[in-house]
Image (cartoon, rainbow over all chains, first blue to last red; front, side, top):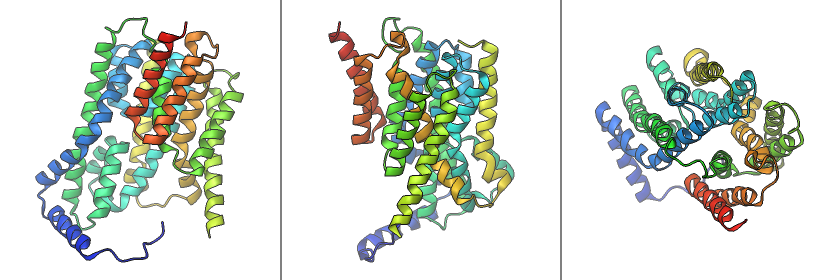
Length: 258
Length: 108
């Protein structure tokens, strides 16, 4: 990222200081509620998404307990959809697990980037936090911490807890709701395509740079060429090829810029 | 469909593995710095894995016994287009779903 050439206008700086002062003055309880409030807009996406997962998993032949097993123990939307898709395709168990884990590898990045902010928390606190480290809690927390570097550990943890309650519990409740409603949806509605549409909708907003486009394009091409392989195997080859393509284009773009 | 026992194996191992990924640096690895090339690859996991998973489903849908289907193809394109333009996941899903049901209704 390039540093902005002009200094910030005075009044915006003052406003920012006021926001920061308010953030620093919050009690842990207030910091918790601040996290709660800032997470609420995300529910517009999370709840329908969770319901969809319940419906789709049920459609793929799972029972309510298994749907809940996914949403409570795995607690990661994209990998849950991936696993259900591959399971309904009768892919070998090991392929299903590896693909699901591959989708979640990005969370290692989140974990690493939170260390400067939360590395000093107790081991139990960090262990609890890891459980609720999802895309949205991470995005909110890292923004909040970087904006207000002076926050105490108590304030940071309380804010994270607030986001986790609002974002993780509805995921579980929504999945249960979906699995329950799903039983009432008539057979003739074409739900087979709900999963592909969901995946595409998740991917599209990520296609921000040439590198992301290259990763996507190479992965798609390889997956189509390898579609004849036993189920799931093509994915395990196509995905790393796509990742390598993305990394390569990123390297080239950086080099041409400097 | 896989057996119930296999499904639970997937749920438990995927759950444990995902937890360990989340816990990795916060827990065991502490302040260790990830190599640049590792970070670089990790950045592209979702955008490579998910399209690779979905592409065959779009081109050869299970519901039509693997025959390419104009309604499903159009629905996929509508989802992608709206998703790229609006960056809104729910809008993209609605566009795709609407296209699919609209076309299934119109087409014989």
